[in-house]
Amino acid sequence: MMQQDIQREGCHILAIETSCDETSVSIVKDGKIVLSNLVSSQIETHKAFGGVVPEVASRKHVESITLMIEEAIQESGVVLEDISAIAVTQGPGLVGALLVGIMAAKSLAFALDKPLIGTHHIAGHIYANNLTAEIQYPSMALVVSGGHTELVLLESEGQFQLIGSTRDDAVGEAYDKVARALGFPYPGGPYVDNLAMEAESAVSLPRVWLEANSYDFSLSGLKSAVLNVVNQKKMRGEEPMIGEIARGFQESVVEVLVEKAVRAVRQYGAKQLLLCGGVAVNRGLRANLTDRCEKEKIELLIPPFEYCTDNAAMIGAAAYLKWKHSQFTTLDLKAEPSLSLEKWSVTYQPVEQTENSID
Image (cartoon, rainbow, N blue to C red; front, side, top):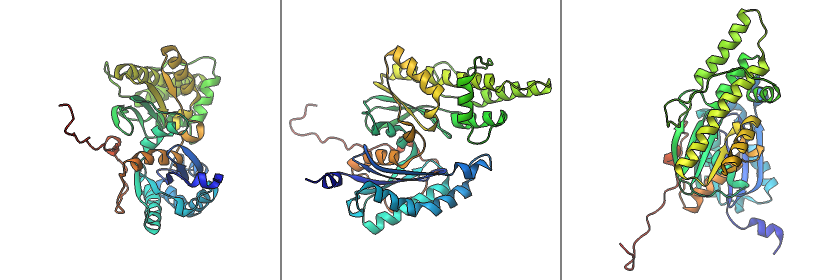
């Protein structure tokens, strides 16, 4: 059998991701094999505004989505007839941005008479780990991104239980706000990370643990503490020690994330810890979490950099969970900016008891 024929066998999901400021289209085979994964970033456009402007993001998605679908199909080596289903990010995200991807996906599904799979953005970040490794259950996912900081328990495949989340700023938001206070442009996370890794000392900043045994996170107070340090320096006519401040901030954030994640793994008996989301590219977090998991003998999965930030391959990986159980979405699919991860979970049909079943 020819290699091209072998590639055409199996489940091919065309996935679309437009939840924020990246337009992405991917073809994923059997939930694990990425045949193409195109990403168009809008960072340079939004940098002038100091953050993502929703209306501008939506317009940029409209401009590029059709061409990217065509290029993703061409690069994958499959044809439209080989596509098994169309997956698209349904939420969370910016409603206007989500709608662009959803309308494109619905149009394709209708025209090709293929199933439609509305997919949860955070489920995508979690199952990005499955593109390069094998997730074992139960697993614990530490989700860190621009809009989310969460601990999610996966009891079984596609089953999500939220055990902790941020009460205010997400990690990515806090990094951007601290970077702005230190004089860096959007997106500020990489600047803070680089400064923190290079600094030889750190400004002492508080650790926000919240209540005993809590798995929630809070970063607004830490952000305010950084602003106080910067303002006090300026009031005394001194230049803020931006490297030391960045390192102090990063050490505070990372310590809380790592400690709570490890504690959650132990309490819930997880076999693995999964690092997920755009902030998973942070070198300080990756290094500290890797070191701690080695000491604790916890298996840690971290996706490659290209699957950490928003991309459609991760949406294809998560959508495959629904494909396997024929849990498709109707063409009246709507964007849901606050879509619940737990409610999106795969629904397992109860096993029917036979006459030989033991009560």
